[in-house]
Image (tube, rainbow, N blue to C red; front, side, top):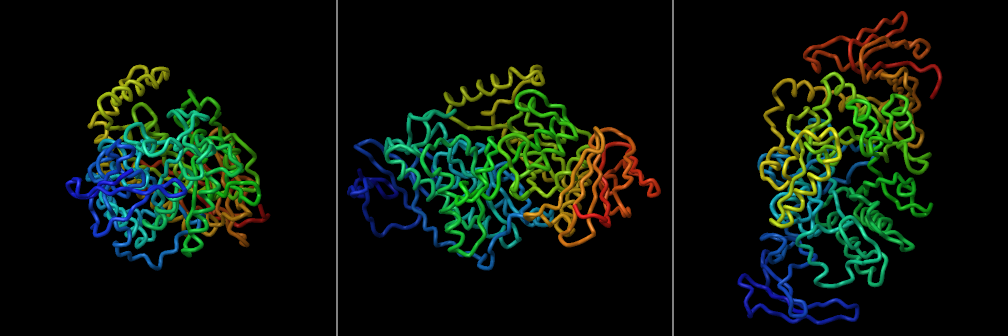
Length: 581
């Protein structure tokens, strides 16, 4: 094995490498400056980029570049991160978040996010990929931030600026597969993959067969580099249900423990959350109790219930959900509806959303929830999400009801791209709702451009009114004591008052003052609150003219007490509690 280093990659820069007893090849080259390119040759095959490259300036098929991770001057020395119960996620795609689609451009929007009231930015995957545009789940160079967004120092700058604005940064990490183009790991060792397990992407990554210890170390080290070299505050592990590992200690548990130890050494709060379709409580329990030690999970059952209830989706996985107010209340009380028993798990460990990249982008037309709803219903649903004790996640543009879709987009080579385009069209052929519409070509550049946010909408109505609503709700969530008590003794009572209305009651710790929200998701009607309250003091409602340009006031008759809704909406009361929940 040899390495070729230098601007010209000529023979003067060829260095032989020596095999160690552990099976690795090493050499030492002096006098190289940051930015110097290098390639590997393995058994006279190559050139290949470094499988642990920190930067691929010419793309994933080109030479790797030497990077000095210690050269960036940080300004976040006082930052220690956030407790999980203080996190409000804002998921974004760097390429589609701004017109420029870069780390530096996204950094210029961080003050906006701070003023909005979110507290953590969750960035869709950054591992470099083939082509110039991708969701990021086709990453092949997991240690190299995608060069189309900027340099490694540009991402450090983004994180640094986020911390100075009081925002945590999470990176979406894909450890269940590599992308289909540009994954050179198998050129260095056949042990990166195993045929024992199969995944939707082919042979599984080898986490449990001979030589798997080195593969496991590769991915654990990747997680740690995001923390050490980029100061990120957490990882969101993609589709951990697709990680195949029959070993005595699952790689997810090993990775979470390594991150926890690193965070303790650094004196920072760092969290590992995951997407996992199985809804396994075991994932959220500590290792000493037989769990895997994750801090949180995406709990999509809430989204599915709401989408079924409000937009009527009933095909595919939505068929398993009723969408009734009773089933929504049951889901909220438990954390999720399907899967293992979540009893005893703190509500903050469940990440709830009305929209995320999957639930929008995996629709044929990339349409958002608010594209299917009237504004009044969308305001009511938004209020429910942000008044619950679960950790909320917003998807970029949700807070102003962005007009833009978020479509599935790729930039693969011609042969692979044609397969992706055909597969996308075949995927939606069975869904009746999409039978009469064309599915946008993911390979087309205009599909990507159509997914970029239009920031001029911020000040244009009706988007500005929805933005005011979200700012108001987020302020309420951060400042009301009853909405901040999300510890091991949950202060939550939720019930279906009728087929269209939910009542949510939250009490501050050691207090008799609480908040009661009545949320009507469908239609008009009266709701009788007799026996529920000793006093009624409305403090917020979704039909305030600030939020509803065509306001239909929510009427409160205190003598009954009755709340009259002219259409879907939400109203919040400050209450005096007679009996503890």
